[in-house]
Length: 326
Image: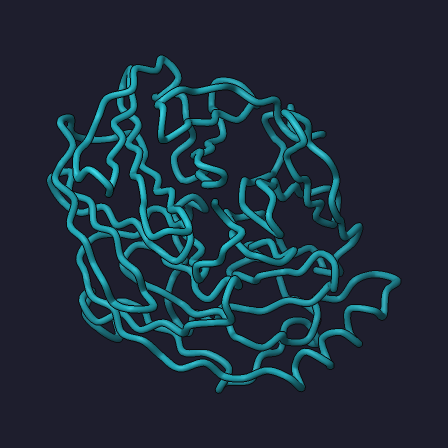
């Protein structure tokens, strides 16, 4: 199925993309975008950058505001410089500018793509985690949480050690659905439509009700961080809604686009992280960062790289900001 020709046209010099067939896993190259914006997506050992400028908007039925905004942003776009990073393993999660990689024999690595800095973690006491997540703070510290049967194991960079946090819900989390915000890691739950929050400092958990309209197991939605909120991007009809959590355990509609003119192309929310109102979407075999306020999109060009069928294996990378986790 094809998209309208005016949608998401991006200049060839706005980004650099790298797939496994073009380089070895130890020679990834990504583009560093503006501070606080999504700069790349990782999938396995491949990466594709998201352009620093804003491309032509996804067509929005009945709206001309997005097109005007896209023209203004495109005029101001500045192409960022490429940066090389190194390290083994497959990307599985990201937070505040760092990417968590999973390697053989239950080994984990934490990378900062903007500097190339890499840390190898000691292995957890258990093997074959159900899923893993990373949470970073504004002072450079981080935690890695692995979900095992009956417990979480949590690594703290401040101590260099793992500790155990018993939890019957650990194996109920949906792999590849994590978002990190406010000292917690959040997962969608497989056994219920809710969200599990793990406090990485205390090891305690709590369950949160799903966003509006997401109680149906068939609902298409994903967790993320946007504009200083823990959020959920929800597919609603032909459009997308962005719901923020709080105050308290209540979801509030922040913004929405009622109809994207995609001509029948499949649209699914992905994990996302941004200081703006951008969400990450899979549109057919494309990946785009969509600003739900401006109606503009920035596309990750893959150039032959094949996206995984499992959306949970697509990891957004955002440069560190002061508002994503305090």
